Length: 124
Image (cartoon, rainbow, N blue to C red; front, side, top):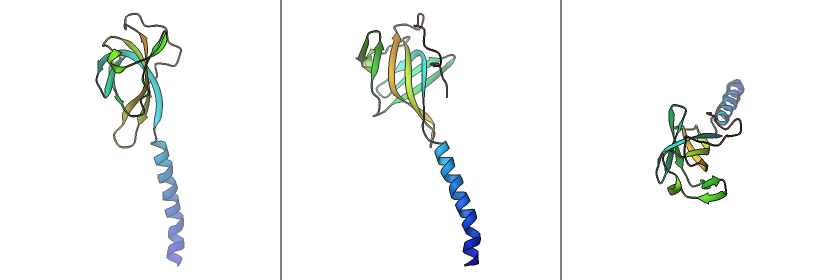
């Protein structure tokens, strides 16, 4: 019985640390803007600064939208060179990857993007 009481505090402490660690590894959301470099049925790649970032297209993907006028589009409307804003969920459990939840077409070309509100170019 004394042995069980002696183990109770370390076991509870370990459980608390594990629960806190799992919460820290949960999903996070973000938004990035850049030029489209490649598009497929299950992914889209954009170039942000000098880095090309791939986003998976999952079941929770709500669609592609045009900002002016606000209209729903499809992935086939995305072409390399278009400037887009991607809302995503970054999953950190297991292999870290980004899943796109929505894509907004900002303009038809990366050479003349529309001004974006501050805080859009975020890299979590």
